[in-house]
Image (cartoon, rainbow, N blue to C red; front, side, top):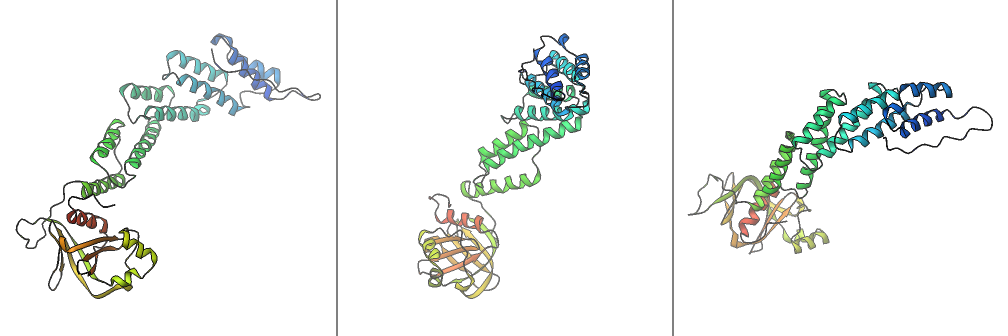
Length: 349
């Protein structure tokens, strides 16, 4: 009836009393060998306690709880707790002299395990919801506790999905739909900090792969010209020779174009620092100073655009280099710039 192997009692010493643990071993074996519930009960615990001089109502609590927990896990393996299973568990608990307080941790663990298995496929169907509701009541769990346990485990499952789709820092429409499907299936609300991350990742995907944004630049554009991005910025000339001479890492990065992990040193900048706005359109880059005449660079005049940690460097056919700092928005600015200059090319790394 109960699929547990019998335990071997510990050998008695030549002198002295038999090991006290043999009292629990005998109780365990009585339960494991029973063919029906009539074959054991609380009277067996009382009898064995008297014979061994051990009070099994109080001693070996951890072993008694572990035995009950193994049986609970086994019966939950059927995917349900039928009426007969509930009768068996209750009878074993009484035989082991276990109180509701003794069983609380086992019941909470069993509920958590069932929740984890139910949401393992990122979905919770009607039958699984009914099982969890029934377990909550059968196991005597406080509703707030059961609800809290579900929320913690389900949210953890949702965050695993979020972490996976955000591994590349972007969120495609398909990935966004997947997250929403899991969220709805598990009846959760996405925490606001996570929602902010998802929105930012979706914006990054749109910037790299979606339709190019169109903005009101508040300046006079050329005929049929479209403004894609305008941001507060400051800019300054760059000494190309000094930049290459910083180190071998800079020379190699400038040659390959992989400069995104480097910073433009202050020492290679010269001339006046201008402040204003940086505008990218489908035809040109315009640096609009707060005072003075704008700098205008057509896309055809640019032979290289480089992204650094602290800004973007524009290199013209005349070998002039300009460092543009868009104050923390380097990635978004550079992505739009790159796509505008290379409309048929791949999105930048």
